[in-house]
Image 1 (cartoon, rainbow, N blue to C red):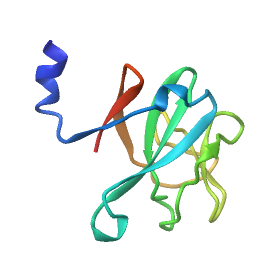
Image 2 (tube, rainbow, N blue to C red):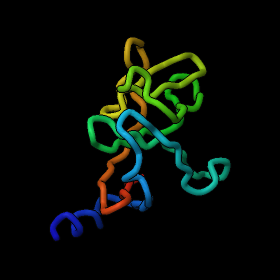
Image 3 (cartoon, rainbow, N blue to C red):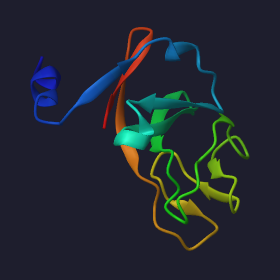
Length: 116
């Protein structure tokens, strides 16, 4: 109950259905609205049994982080310059770069709620 009350102060959230089937070590890209008109795109990843959400916009040179299998089973990657990011923290792996933006995720039944 307290969690739901606190959700009112955490900002806008969206519900995504069917992500309970996302296997460990995989990611899938989602759009919220039209990315060309102020919408957002993010990559939802399952790592070590938990879901994490990373903004699809790479902080290096505005490439797009790809979905599919996680690199080395642990990282999302921007194919523009092969920059890898830890989906748990958004930290760049092996490179000097700003962190990728991450979003709060909570699993609910067969889906999840993501705060954007």
